[in-house]
Length: 177
Image (tube, rainbow, N blue to C red; front, top):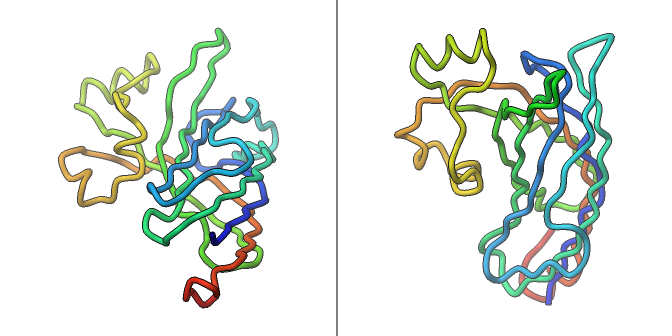
C-alpha cells in the first residue's frame, strides 16, 4: 500500500476578535485510507497573546496513513475556541484544509468561518458572548461552499500550519509526485 507521512505543527491563529484562544483539530479521510500511527484528533493549549493578535500554539502533528487509492485524501478539520476569564468556552471559527499532496515542507494558512446568525444573535454575541454553533461540526466544516449554501456565514480568522509531507510507494500505484 502507498503511505503518507505528515510531520509538522499547528503554529497558531490570527485575526480572531478575542484573545485566550485554543484549537480543536481532527483528521478526516476516505474509506481507502487507514491511520497507522499518530493521533486522529486533539486540542492545543490556550494562549493569551500579549503583544499582538497572534495566538501561538506550536502543537505537534505526526501522522502516518496507508491507502489503497487517492479518493478521500485526508483533511484537517479545525475549530478555534475562545476561553473567557470564567473558564467558559465558545467557538469562534470552523475551517479545514486538505493535507498537501506533494512531498516537501509546506506553510499553510487555513481560513475559518462561523455561522452569521440573525441580527439578535450577532448583538448577543457582541455583548454577552456565545452565538450560533453547528450541531454536527465535522459534517459542515469540511463541506465545500456548495454544500453550505443554506448557512449564512462570515469570516472568522486564520489558522497557520507548517507541515512536512513524505510520500512512499505512490509510484508503484501510478501516482507521480
